[in-house]
Image (tube, rainbow, N blue to C red; front, side, top):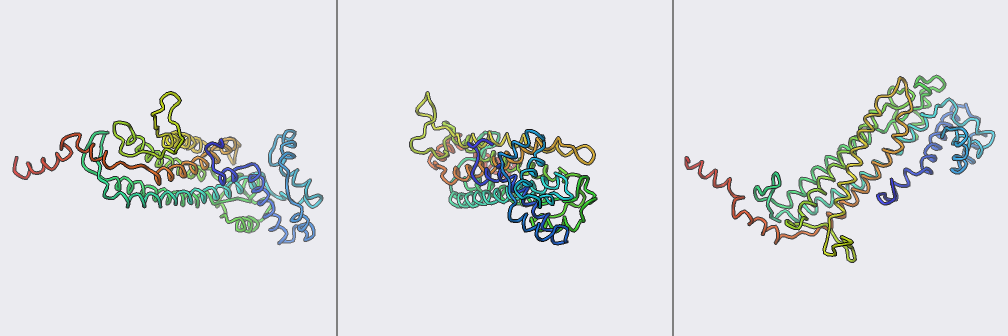
Length: 366
């Protein structure tokens, strides 16, 4: 994702440096498990611990020749370690490393999102309580309906945000699976005990039945959950955009000193922060479709999912983090105009109380 819509923690999590570091953590965890079983001599294991590392520029250089990013990574690691490096990647296939590391990073991304979502939930609760008596007109189909309160809007968003938290927590658990089971998931060259040991070290669980990869329905659940979260933020943003229209102007997103709304019309105070959120939500929702397409792979695995996930996982998590932070700030600093709300309630000259009249007439037998 471009830096404009990225925050530092998420950007660093999905960087090339972090990707290769996560691969190295998986490889080292496997080496430790093998050393614990006497497969790797103690002296060689110490050599691996002391010297394991990689060089991103060297990896890029090697990949230009071999055309395989994991082989390029392993070559760089072996160059750092020396002869003991022959033990690295023993009995593994590339997806043991890549899928397990990706699951680990996706869990970390969910943790960042949950923290950002918690900030939003707190803000929604505070604003809901602050405006529980701020009366305004409720609208259905865009038309004045009956009296409502701004606090109720916040309460609705608050409950939805809590549901999103439950869904995201469940999605985090859905993706918290790794595999160290070889080329087609049959443990042909490593004991299942190695897998259990490695994944426990990494805070992951064992995929019950893997092929060469972890089944992609797990990833689809994560992306679908992010799509719902993005749509919930879009719902809030869209409401603020409607209420900020010049002919409504009941609320207004913050507009800082020195900010400009238009290069041609200096009076403009546009809801660009909320428009940002609505626009970025479209990107996240589009990524959901791509994740669903990734579920159906050939036989025990093809690589059609890989290029997709290199884009959609970093982008969707990064955008949701940015959107959560932006929307939390908008809501915390939202300008509210109760006087305008009262004026708008009078526009229909009492028609918003029509149901009271209807029920009274009905009770009178008319």
